[in-house]
Image 1 (cartoon, rainbow, N blue to C red):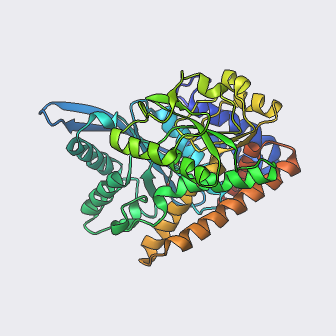
Image 2 (cartoon, rainbow, N blue to C red):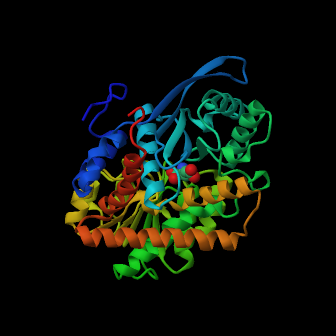
Image 3 (cartoon, rainbow, N blue to C red):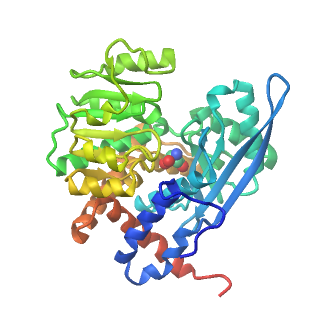
Length: 424
Ligand code: GLU
């Protein structure tokens, strides 16, 4: 395998975690493994400079990225991340996980991802808008409704998508709603999109819990992250009688043995923009989060959270990966040895991109569905994909992650093989 010269990597980097996951699936793919190197090379990588005039008149430069990892099965699809730690290595990994995710749930997309190395909370709304519009113009040469369709991710939201849609449309000279998903409803957005990732985590989580005979009612739950995804997952599990005992974000780790009141915490967070200081729980130290006695652990923040050390001490039966790439490969092995089931990100959090797909289809048809219709269709896609992966894991006596990669890689590499290499 050739090493990529432009992405120097540590063995713990996101891209190297992804490569290790690909290494593991190769031996299950028979003749198709001849094509596996395709997945070790992003198809197209764009780095852009974004000059931004700040409100005080100074000019700052930010680095932005858009990586199209694989387009064998259709246009690129994947979110845009605004975070101070974004770099090429991370965006490459996130784009690759989108390739696997879209194929694992059988959406007709390839994988892509973008981002800007910026702390969006340090910008004013006007600065954020100017940054977004310039970034969109810069990546405008490779995105488009039939080419590559961005969406929200960590640090971006429907407002950012509206600016992206408008900027792309202004440059085209006509309104192109299908260029991004996760838009506001009145601009061609889809009902159910905002809650879709959290809902998918809940649906797949309940399906696996039932198969593993873990009772949801009364189950103790720990959630890392209380953003768009973490808060919705907390709300749904709370609603069916699970007890959310601990929630961690970058400001605090909350703990309440009797269960954190999710409605109250949501109100607190909306008002204070952080969970720290919430009076309905005590604050514990960061590492104690992993040691808490729980049944289900839900990482819903960033990648690289479940290290080998944490995997050795974590006290749960089931892990639902709401975040992308939260678990290191060595940690995966420890968890497997300890009999802890991991529902991998590429299935578990695919509810978001599934409803993004519905949004894009609705935009193309200019015909919009009801929320009931959307939830019904996305729940079915999520459960069917989960059951398929579950069966693959039993057949091959492997983890759910490896099984999801087998399902996805077979689909991608079959497309790759039948398309052939141009020029031949
Ligand atoms: N950012 C989300 C993800 O990681 C959604 C991507 C999309 O909807 O295209 O799956």
